[in-house]
Image (cartoon, rainbow, N blue to C red):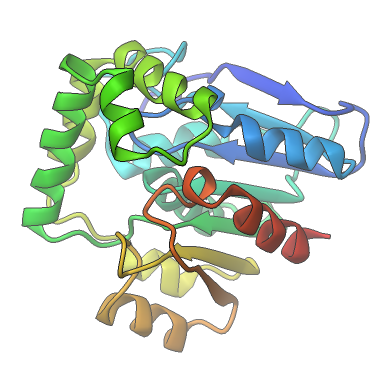
Length: 251
């Protein structure tokens, strides 16, 4: 597996003793974590966001397995110290953070997983693949505003920009290279204190049902809070509630 060096964005004082890493989801980018980065910076943190392989300004790779994403971020460390105080991942970024943390338990002192995509049925995985293809090829800001009228204008703009900027090959192969999408065993094995900020199953959630119950029952290192009224992008649907839950856990 070839490790790729990922580009970084930064918010806050780089000399802060508290270091956070932000890992976006599929079809997004470091730019889309702007609200989390600002909130952490205002709370005295040094917050760094990366573009995953094949996304934003990151190098393109030939494969997009969970292990590829995880290997890249595992080799992304804070300047001046070997461990992140917290790593915050969304969707597939949350899955990658889990794998990295299991592989290197000292890599992060805490994890926050935003509606993590840990187990998808073949039907749901195909919905993700086709949605990513539409996002790359056809998505417009008018469509995003129609579907998410409550989103901040920057989130609308950056959703379209991030889909366009990502490699179409990467977006498709993030699904095709991970048949039987399942990292539940890694979630059961992680020893890092972990908070799952889940979305509302009544809206749209990837962390729900039997596999979510199984993980929570099997691993006492993991706790969960549900953001009611939020869909899969909890940090864009309900930013204030998501940030409050995040800061309560890390401070």
